[in-house]
Length: 123
Image 1 (cartoon, rainbow, N blue to C red):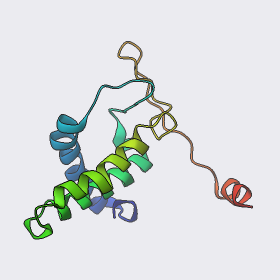
Image 2 (image 1 turned 90 degrees about the vertical axis):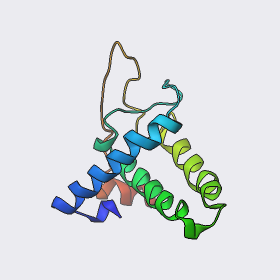
Image 3 (image 1 turned 120 degrees about the vertical axis):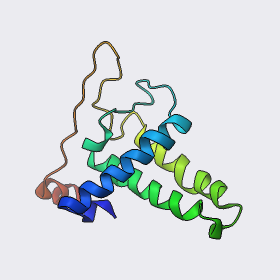
Image 4 (image 1 turned 45 degrees about the horizontal axis):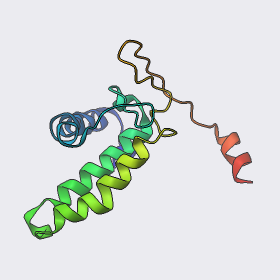
C-alpha cells in the first residue's frame, strides 16, 4: 500500500498510479468540477487522495482480472469506485481547499492534525 512505501519504491508506484488516473480513471469517470464536486489537478500532493486512489487502483487490478469472474467490474463500481469518488470529491474532502475556478486556480493542501491534536480530539 503506497502510504507505507518510501523513496524510489514510492516514486515508481506513484508514477504507475498517475498513469492509471490520467489515462483510465479521469477520461472515463471524471465529471464536471464544481465547488460541490471538487477535483485537484495536483491530486498527487494530497496524501489522502493518493492513499484512496491507490486503494481504488489495487481493487481495480484485482476485480478486472479474468479470475475475478464476469461480475468483477460491477463489484468494483459498486463497492469501490462510487464510495471512493464520493469521499474524494465531497465538498469537505481532501480537495476542499483547492479552488475550482479556471480563472483563479488555487491549490492548497489542508494541514493534518498534529499527534497531540489527534489525541485531544479522541479524548
